[in-house]
Length: 250
Image (cartoon, rainbow, N blue to C red; front, top):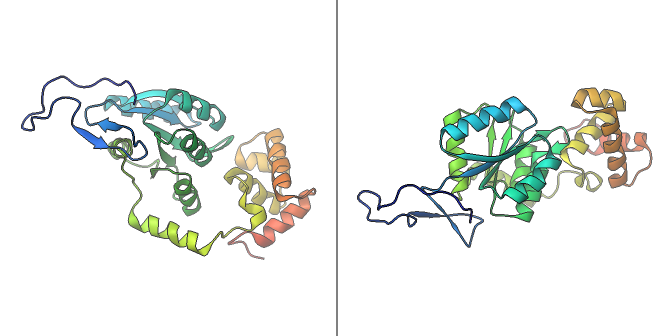
């Protein structure tokens, strides 16, 4: 368990419970527990410095320790693994990937870290992917500061923020099987976005402008998409996507 600082000694008034004994079970941490008085540690992943700074100020004002932060998915995975925070607050959409993939990697490396997904808008597909990646919760950036603090404290103690209605939707989705064609199933969220724009006939430069990516980065995504789909020509992949993606007119 993390080497955090505890509050002053002595039993809590009216409980007779000595310090360090007022404990909550923690989901995903079978060999340990999180103390009520223990300082929660958090890692922040968001590509906007202003957002990270605001979150850091908000959390630290409430006694939560921000032990690290990152602006890219690539940077985040290694740092989270090294720092071992109680909670990783992950932006869903990132310039070099997505927070869901980071969550999946973090949970596979160290399931003791709870992942709380942060996003600008409600998205059922991203929510489904986040749950399947092992996220403990999913909140909108428009959330009130006090509610975000409460959410972080809940997932740090092992609780899930996912309500029964959400869970039911996920189970139904699993029973129905994959809604995406097998050739598209292995694409990341960002690769799928690139493919959708390819299907609209956009050039690499235009796709880059739409997704705020460098043209070279888009070219790399296109290469990856073609490789995963087992295709050699861009137009072939674009036509296939237009015909097989769900919710797209054929």
